[in-house]
Length: 506
Ligand code: GBH
Image (cartoon, rainbow, N blue to C red; front, side, top):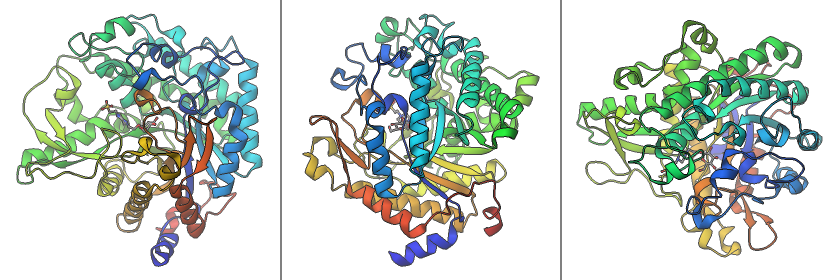
């Protein structure tokens, strides 16, 4: 092990960033405290049957009140970076910048100050899915379907840069546009809960309706525009004075051919990744959607960027973000479809043509452990986008059966230890052999938390949270393993990625 760690230490850039990641709605709780406004997830979770056991994030991990203790955990483990998100409606209860909730602003100032005082750098996501409910009028002209919401987001981002930009040097505009649009407007099982009637009857009740074959593309389009506007605002008004960096993070599974001897299945791999990472990577880097998508999404359902927006999007990043968890086998079907799932004309499966499982199941139904996919997608990003700086903003796992175990046993999370170690090794190989410019790694997550539709039934934390015992926190074995790893590898503190040293070492 020490040999392996020694190798990593000499391979990774000197100022490689190690961190953990969280999101406001999943950890903060304090949902109706001190003037916080309601977001679409507050509304969505109130419908019976939407969340496991009808649990809610009203209290969640109560990080709002307990952050000093959580900073203590970061300190104990020697983790120098924490990714958090800002709850839009905690600082702007109606979403609108003309209505500021000072108590919310104070909370984030206190949180950031406490982190910085502890030597921990906060990295801030502006949007991790908790859109103001005031922008939801249950029609196809609301939430991210309304182009004006992009302007509202830009105003909110402007407010954040202006208010917190002296402390925050790394901004992530959006977390996983694919997830909140495809699941929120296609499948309908995330807020705002829209989908075609044939996809689920609940969508009429919660989201007011929907069209799974068009709305995910429209919502994603507007979110991309929102990103471009916010980056423009940052660059025009703040970046020079504040000296920070900005980008977004994109979730993507990798894929392997279902039938290894079928060329169409190999082709389906590229299409599958283009439909996920490329959907948001291409617009940022090239200013337009992937050809893989424009070729296949028929009937004018994929919007196009006009010339000025295309120009604004092109280059709207200082780094590219990646959230990687899993991979699947993909098989070309050739059947044109009228919804997202078929637009790529492939289907995916955890097993291949010979029945081989791509990797062990985690506790989450969608997550099979496949570390090689991590290296492969890093390489894919490097090759497609001309060798960008990449941050891994999420990587982590839920352990099979973990939530059923008594706390004392859940602490021994060998499954997670293996997952994290194996993935970091793949990342190191990507840097060492493929020369991918990975600049940081954020483990999801610091704490067990509200896992969206899975409620508290699925745990991703390196810290156990006892929901039956006053939200007591206990560090799991994986937390100590991560501590050792970071300690062995080190990090040059105080240096920003502006400083030289990284690419020069490759
Ligand atoms: C991340 O998404 C999220 O950013 C984070 O908030 C979350 O806590 C973490 O995952 C762990 O789940 O239910 O079959 O429709 C990771 C990518 C994409 C994984 C959507 C779950 C839903 C599949 N996610 N996917 S399904």
